[in-house]
Length: 360
Image (cartoon, rainbow, N blue to C red; front, side, top):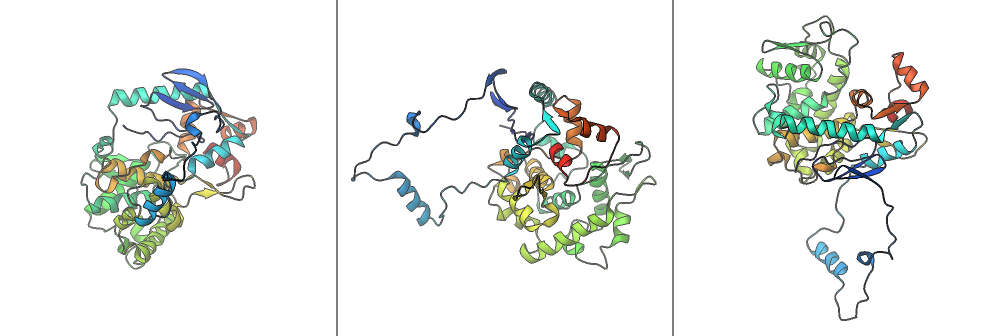
């Protein structure tokens, strides 16, 4: 079964199941039925406890003892990222962004149809000419580096003038410009994926970064100083906690995608994508790049080896600035007049502001 991370504003879509959840309706075999409220404990025989005699063993107590003997004190040791719950909270308290149920259903069906037609699977990730092909520790280091820097490729310039990287006889823009630049650096024997290298201020500095991410146009790579800071910070964390090895970070998660996301958000500040929303004391988590990193490892290794995660379906869609554009185009989103006017006027939205959080 292939789970497609497609949770939007707190709703999960598992595309190859006969039952899908979208908006406030339950879709069963493409039919729409109203969502039922949970039954009370007394209304379902499955939820009723039967009386036990003093001679019978309590199964819950036995399980607790078994877990204790085996060294696991927590019976419910299922990690959660909290992203879906937080997205639902924002959705329930949004006044500027709304979901359209019919548009969401139509978009889900359209996306699933295209994925079936193209034979999309985990193998698709490695089929791209720029993505690594080997299934080894070096590839993990490449993915780790790539997703530390996987942010903000926005440009208002036309295609021929925006930041681009020439590599292997082609010109790459957007996300692919990042991947191409990293591959080009490795071809030039620059150890750009080494955390030891990131910590060297003599070798890994702005001059080096400008060379690695040199552009085929007059526009430079956006936020280059911030990207260097991300590498430097991550290199220090890897040195202090994980013996300079991204593989050790993955191993610490114990084959859990959700736990790995939480570890990345906890230990690497640049991946701690969480924000305050409308006075809520607990921050709202999106964890975009942390989830992308885990998903990339899973897809690259096709769910095996370093990518053997038993709960990859707990990942959500990666809520960046492109996703709302696409969802709006596909009829999934509706905006309040003030927000709609601001977007059409190309006004800059505050990072972490209420409009941005509702869109994400």
